Amino acid sequence: MKKDYIISSPNRRIDIAVKYPILAAVIFLGLAILFLISGPSSKSTTTGPLSIAIIGTTITLISFSLVHKKGGIILGITSPMSFYGIFYLLYYLLPYLLLFFTDRLPVGNSLIIALLLFLGYLAWCAGVKSSRIREGVKISAEQIGKQEAYALTILCIVCIGLVIYFYTWRTYHGIFFIHARHYEQELSIIASFRDVFCSRLQLPIILFLGLLSSVQYKKVASFSRRLFMFYGFGLTLILILSSQTRLSITALIFMLISMQMHRQPIIKLRYIIATCSIALIMILFIQGVRMEDYGLVSSDNQFLYAIKKSGSDAVLGLKAYNAESGGSVISRAGGSLTFLSTLIDTIKSEGMFLYGKGIASSLYSVVPRFMWPDKPAVIPLDLIVQTKLGLKNYDATMGPIIQFYVEGSWFGVIIGYFSFGWLMGTLTNRVMLSNKIWLWIIFFFVWSYISNLELELILGLITTARNAFVLYLMYKMIFLFLRLRK
Image (tube, rainbow, N blue to C red; front, side, top):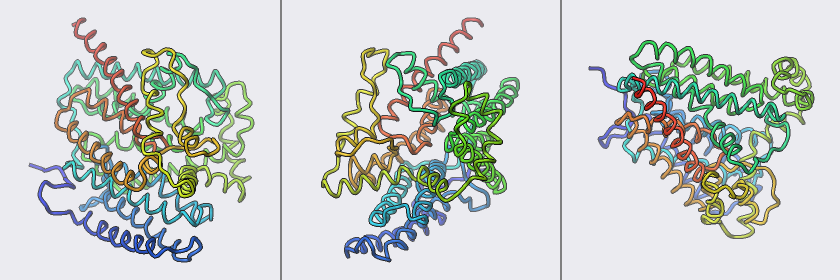
């Protein structure tokens, strides 16, 4: 009988694909600590090479977790160590390199940021490993019953309708283009349902349709595959036209792993190269449109304008590319790291971390508005953090590495990412062992949320669990209706 490939075996042997990069990582970490103890000046010529060496070690860790010893790339939601590493690379490591080599990252903080990124991913890997996860196991939909499969299919159709409603509303109000203008959510139950629930359905639907494509009922599987292709490509196109760079790349990655969901998550290198090539084209297209976005923003119907004019605008924008516009693109890509650098400087001067005060100040945001109609407007956590640290408020991103650091210092990064890794490893094990629908819903929602490393993590996961609960109630209503009809 053919055995599933397991990265983390239950015995004490450490797989060779993990042993040597961890050893190299520990050596680099020791050198970095010695360097910090020696107290170098911010202008030291050693800081730059050492920072790049630490970032290179982190990328090596991710690379080794991705490579299968028998060939191919391990990429799937049942392999959290490698799958999360892709987004860690996309949101943190590549922007770091861009900022560093264009002299846009403050020299005094480059080493600290590199160490934080390294420690964050190392702690994540340790947390995943500590859960004794069986990584690389293929997802089986054989235990999904006929009525459950039909109920999930109907649920996906309803959710697609809600996503269409969300983008139709944004188009009608002139904010289809993500950078069109500043938008503040209305203090109403409908607005909360639309912006907090409907908008978060985009990625989970791809995963659900991928799961349904492998059920044993031919009609459901065949219909789900066609709907998967229609919705997946349609959503990716919408995300591209609305100028959502990273989310469109995430949708593309989710489509790739969903097509392999019923097999072992080992993807051939040529598919990875093709996906990376498509992603690069998407990035160039979106950045070209952003350089020529004036007609799009002022148009009466931004969606129709984007369909008709985006291609020509992208070409014109790329032709008009210069050092200034390129610098703007790099600054946006590395915005979270620049914000982290600002926080590091502020904490150095003020000598204090928040130690949970920022999270405590935003706890009210997890209460559903239908339970608290008079709930005040939710203030983004990045603004709360800036206010508590005495910074001037500006639009920034509050990803996990920033949240863990500002709320709990270096120990916060280590403990936070270790706990996060353990949680995802444990959740993966539970899903693989039980195959219960409610666990699948939570699992897909959580992955759809944590794949965006520009969102704060702790309270966001609570809100994600709340959304998953609402979706499960919708599923149960559909399931009971089908059973009553029978």
